[in-house]
Length: 210
Length: 210
DNA sequence: ACCGGTCTAGACTGGTGGTCCAACCATCGG
DNA sequence: CCGATGGTTGGACCACCAGTCTAGACCGGT
Image (tube, rainbow over all chains, first blue to last red; front, top):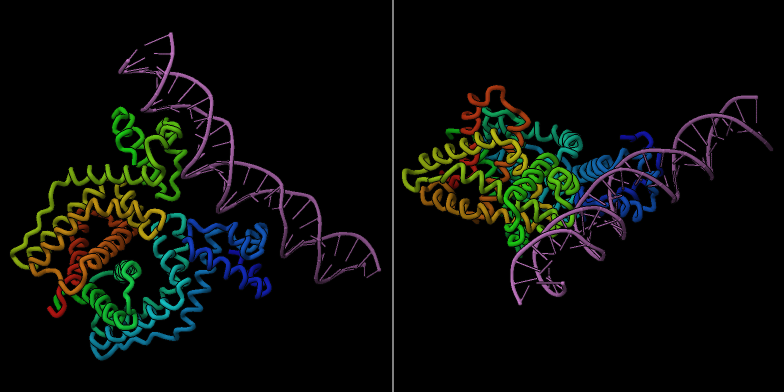
């Protein structure tokens, strides 16, 4: 992580390299992405890249961070009601989920990057990168979980980390499945699907015995 | 797939290469595994390897298949009651899950291989391999799902493929989480954890409105 | 004895991520 | 105005990768 150096680069050069890296990572995933192709596409030299970044992993984390921040800036906030009971809470979750899915459907490159990120979990070489990115959204997940518990919508008998991990696993599976079975008429079918998916998450997170 | 040639190899040579490949794949995952290291460890030459296998992917699938068959042979069958209602069904699932987790805890290399396999899902280069391996356990998942539905324990409003995918996603997340938070006293804590995890799966798969 | 198919060894190819260092150039002290 | 300094760049170079290719060892059948 050589941010201080990188920040000194002219902004247009930053954007050039970020765009090239995003294209490459989105098209080929982390492992099959080629730094040489990124260099060719961006006009940067190898020496410069390794002067500004620690390596492939660092570049990947940087691009993912920038794009994630851009995404969340564009989406605004995700208020979750702590009162009104579980139904109100899950309705809000459904709302946000649908909003995110819709935006991602319109920015396929970011979607591919995120998919690649999630798919790479478990790769020991990327573990540190995973953790760094996870910390980016940790505050949000933490707040969502707390709100859900305050609303009586989320079980309190299991550690939060486990719940977050399971929900991410479900989300990844649903995302992959959605991608493999692209509906013919997304605008009509998507809300129903999202409702079903959130329903499954609700079932998994609901306090037992309810 | 050059099985006929491979089958003609002396069994001890088969075991040698399989053991070396298992070690390598378990230690480094598919992508970071090195065929050269496998060759060095097994004493096989590159020409031989490429005579008997189509390539890295083929070797991986072969090893995974052999190990999976060994695992299921050792575990016997997984009977699931179709009568007795949801409670009986989920109790049986919990039983089987605990049995598998226990066995996997004792065979870390196989566990690592499976983890790598699951983590690699979504990698286009491995898609064919994924499908081949998925077909190996497809009959079992299909039977389990049908039994669950017959017992009234599993929702029928969503396509089976989606349910299987989501359960696999949850399983993977739980497995990863378990690995990262290894309990001090597995024998005592594991049953409770498995109960909670199966409970979450049950919540996700339960027919809505129940 | 020789011939044809089966199998093996390992050099070789084109690619990868990462390292290294000479040279460039902007800034600053004198 | 000049020279020194140190951040920055280009690109040759390295070790290693998966996969290809060919020369020849081996062996059973004729």
